[in-house]
Image (tube, rainbow, N blue to C red; front, top):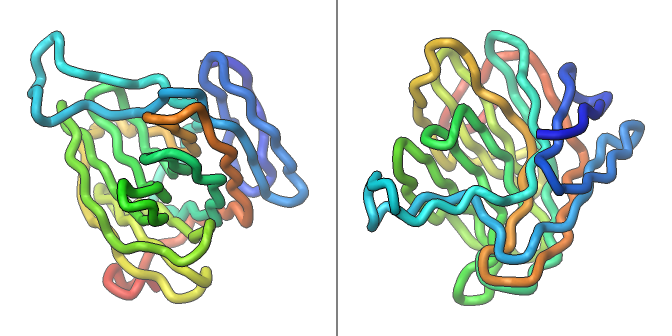
Length: 208
């Protein structure tokens, strides 16, 4: 991690990963970056947890530690898609073995798609639905000791993507943004309409 930065929409400092450059427009609640070529955060489940397992953890990130308790953290994510698996991501990070991604990603079929990945030693990979257009609203919510992922095409009606827990007894989890381009030469990613609220979801299924 490198520089401390501040975004007015979130009540905690954000720290950029080494070598990454983030443009922050605090008044507009917007952050932008360009993903590094051949960058990702992924641990291939086919190779297990062996020491030589394929572990790619070089994507650009901008992360901070949220306050204790329930929260909702959301943004509209726009990606200049070019190559397979290009993505803008809301990232929950504990350590290299424990993290989770909610992605707006370019599928092998050439379609923008909502994807989630949860890593507990190794990663899984779950596709949700395809999207018409180059932007989507994504949201990460903490509900007690669990995490809920939702996505929305209009920022109003939310669809549950995932509900899960990661072992984090010391509440070390960071939250923030990631940009990746695993097979390509990079892509522009914008997170706007960034919002952080300290309220609890009342209905996991409809996202309210």
